[in-house]
Image 1 (cartoon, rainbow, N blue to C red):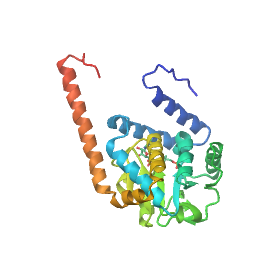
Image 2 (cartoon, rainbow, N blue to C red):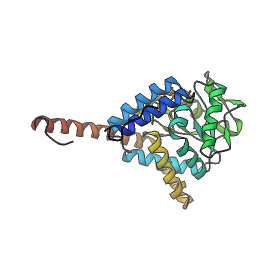
Image 3 (cartoon, helix red, strand yellow):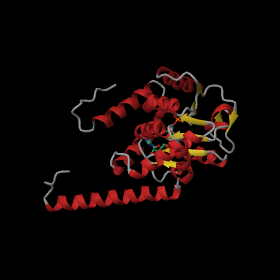
Image 4 (tube, rainbow, N blue to C red):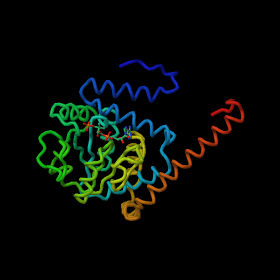
Length: 263
Ligand code: PTJ
């Protein structure tokens, strides 16, 4: 892995990129995952690389839905295993939820490697190898899943998803919680609870809400019942409009001071 100097202004971003490249070389993440990451990071620049207030609302709702579920499952793909194996396992234990490895570019060898990554960080009970069911209406290899996992789940958390499966899972009547920085992706537009935030921030935030809400189950029920999907999406778009307006204002101020204004 290329060493990134601590003093680099984009240190965290470059380390994440190197982590993904290394995960690709180890056969965990696919090349397509590197492209997906770039797309996500571009959106994160626009969003200010912080969890927005509307994302926080969605993350609290996500925690409430996971806690009130009968059979919650967290789906893991190559990018998620590379960047967030530990947060996934922590969240799964906190809920508790099952973890299922489910890949778009599925090979049995990669499923096995991802299961090992998750086992290394402390989760022994992982579904993925030897699937015994299919998600109806999906042509891709992603349709292959476990009866005891995604197939029978009532709530599924699908970080960094492709839109097809999110749609197929909602058609099955499941509550689908997505994590996707793209506010316009088909996943975001079809998930029951779209979380528009960066993967590691979102998972940690959902876990924090899970830990708080666990102490008051009636509050979790109230939040899941009162969750307003359309209102939250609108708030996310309004947040982007506000961000852009701020950028316009800052650029104009820069112009007036000949670029001497501090950012
Ligand atoms: O490991 P596999 O075979 O299951 O493949 C995984 C990928 C990610 C390649 C596959 O699921 C895929 O093709 O996904 P998409 O359709 O590219 O969608 C991924 C979405 O995640 C995009 O909309 C990105 O903007 C978003 N994204 C990427 N990185 C992050 C992210 N969202 C949040 N946090 C990130 N770190």
